[in-house]
Image (tube, rainbow, N blue to C red; front, side, top):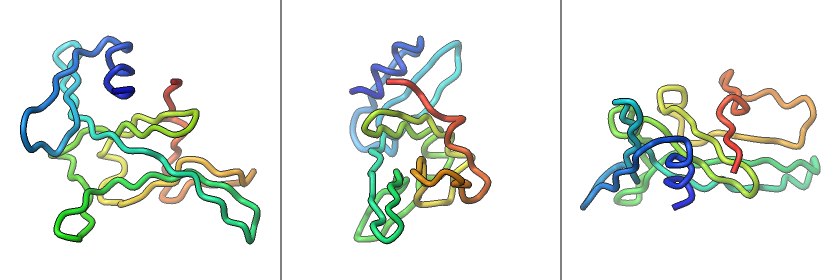
Length: 123
């Protein structure tokens, strides 16, 4: 509901799919339609280096197998963390299954050349 409210606050109309759907909701603004999948970010602590990092798993599990969402199924992920959210275009992350969003390491360089700072949304 926080994700749908966030899109609504940004001027999108929200539509909820009925039945079995690969997206959590559809957002539409100025004839632009976005299929959105919501995910929760997890914060992990790597004790050996006293580092905290935040990551999101961008997959679904069916029959015990983890499968990424294709860009045909989902246009954007809305990932919500403790104090921050990210709207991540699936075209940038597919077929990755996870993405690191933040780290306490000062010289952290995002893997794969992706910079999640560009996708931050204030809550």
